[in-house]
Image (cartoon, rainbow, N blue to C red; front, side, top):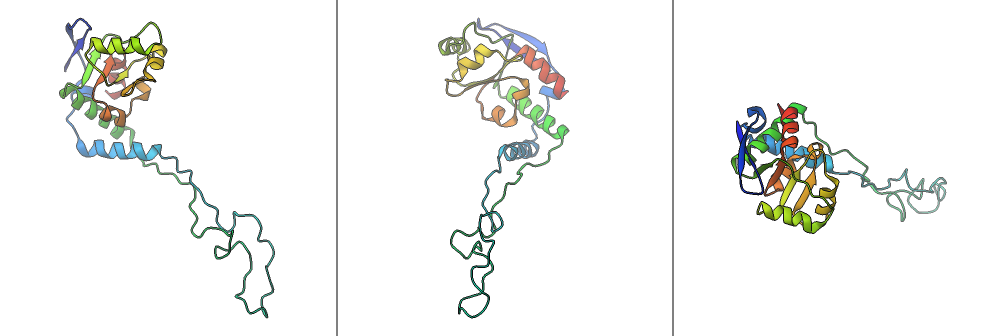
Length: 204
């Protein structure tokens, strides 16, 4: 498969890429399963409530078993009592879903292939700026007539990363930070040739 490498002057050159990485048919069901698994894995699952064994106190029987006219009680930390534990208290849990490595890589290949077919994937030789300035990044994006984009650069350029933190709709990551959700949500993907070769090596 062939992809065009764009330059700021508007010129293009053609490079050969792997069909298994950028020429795969779009598998909607697999992509959906991968996105669901990724979003589930991002959930913290740290919310917790205290049950009757977690709240302090309640070590002594509040009153004798018989003769008071009240319902029998063995602890003041029962859910029926004020400041008692919570019935069916929520506990920390793991929301992650199992997804095979082959399935995850196949989903990324499917997404990248569809992005290439939709002309949402822009390949460039390099995308770097000399100083960490937001204005410099906007000028660089303007050369390609873009406003919103996900920039995939490997190795990660620190100046580029710092400059993009204050720009809405622009994100910067390396190959290790690529995920299906960011690829799908970004209107345009700018990928350098070194990053493309590394992704190609991982997915092929």
